[in-house]
Length: 346
Image 1 (spheres, rainbow, N blue to C red):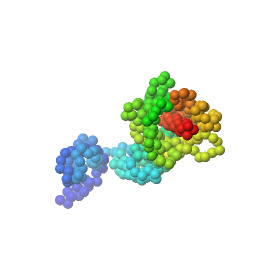
Image 2: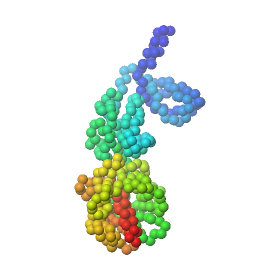
Image 3: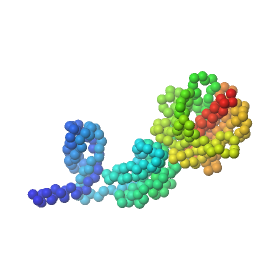
Image 4: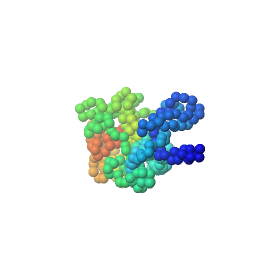
């Protein structure tokens, strides 16, 4: 009996590995024991805690056979940012592939649902040494991120209309109760549709796939009633991809905006070019021009085309140099600025 008890105690020292199971039907008002088929072809008895609903997918620990060598953990793994207060760094606990918990720090201003990569410390079996992730970087390729840093992966641009290098934004003057903007390709096809609410405490403009307004592609959203920053949000996922902020007061005339990444770090600027004074004093008789510069190099150019019946802007962008969602929202913001300037003069 003593040897049996000793053997039973030693059996608990077997290597345990995680395994996912689906909770079967039964009486879940109390803990329930079931037999499961492990990934090693053996049968193991596991205990399901009380009040776990049928169909729930949960992780349990099953014994590994003798001589089993666990696979090496990767040095970096992807996690999804959970909901919470992202105005400051947030500490959360994740589960490693071997079932062990790991505490990581998510930098401030990383939106909920964003996919980030964190390094696994060498003490946990990973190949990377630093236990703490640094401040998130601007969106770059994974090969350009140094060890010990955290990379934010933005949702990819999948809609073909957003990848067009040239678009035409048209706002018709013959509108009474709506403020709709139609977006055309160079061959005259309407490829997108934007709608601006007439009465809203927090201005927001959504760009849809078509006039049915069922599938938003990009959302230009103000952070508040009196703020001068507008976030650019990916429509299908709701993840912030960047922001556009009014620039500081300078000695030059014309509009000046700062182009920010998802962490509100400036990496570009939007400037109004051409004869700025004439454009401001008489917007209906002149054609405005803007351009986005990144490190002093122009990557986006927006030109106004003269039209009697509408306000029309042409967007020329390079999807490789600037996120197409950012470029489209920059052009939309320029159009809104021109509409506001004309209304004030009238």
